[in-house]
Length: 188
Image 1 (tube, one colour):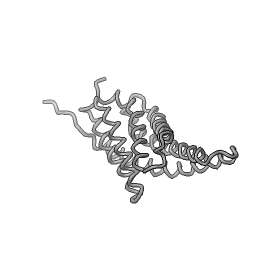
Image 2 (cartoon, one colour):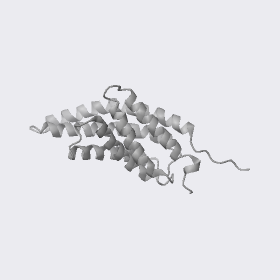
Image 3 (cartoon, one colour):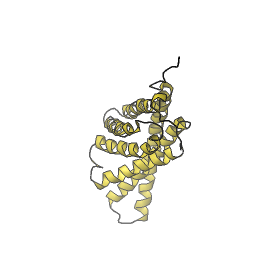
Image 4 (cartoon, one colour):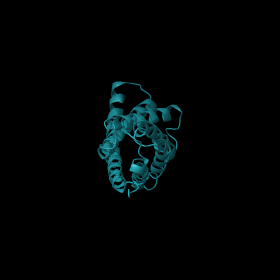
C-alpha cells in the first residue's frame, strides 16, 4: 500500500518563515543605510539634481540591498528544491527594483505603503515564478500570493512595524510549502 504524498511541507514552511523574517529585518536595516549612502553620493556628485531623482536612487538602492539579502536567505532554504537556486537572489532583486522603478514612473511610489507593497510583491512574484514554474504545477499562484502578502506586509508597517515582515513571511511560507510539496511538484 503506497502512502499519498504530503500536501504541505511543514519543515519548509518553518524554515522559510524564519529566513524571510530575518532577511526582511536585516535586509531592511542594511538597505536603509545603503539608500542613505547612495543618496549622499548622488547629491554630492551631481549638483542641482532634483530631490525626486535622489530619493528614487536612495529607494532603489535600499530596496535592492534588502531584496538581495532576503532572497539570499530564502535561497538557502530552497537550495535543494530548485533547479537553479542561484538565480533566486538575482530574480528577487530584479523583481523588487523593477517594481520600485515602475511604481515611481506611474506615480504610486509616494502613496500608501499597501500599494507600494502590493506592486513590489507583484514584481517579486512574477520574477520568482520563472523558477517556481519548473518545480510546481500551481506556481502561477505564487504571483497573487506575493502581491497580497507584500501589500499587507507594508500596510502593517504603518502602525505595527514588526508585524509587517512577519505577516509577509507567514503568508509566503504557507504558499511555498504548499507549492513545493511532493503532491504539487511537477514530474521531472
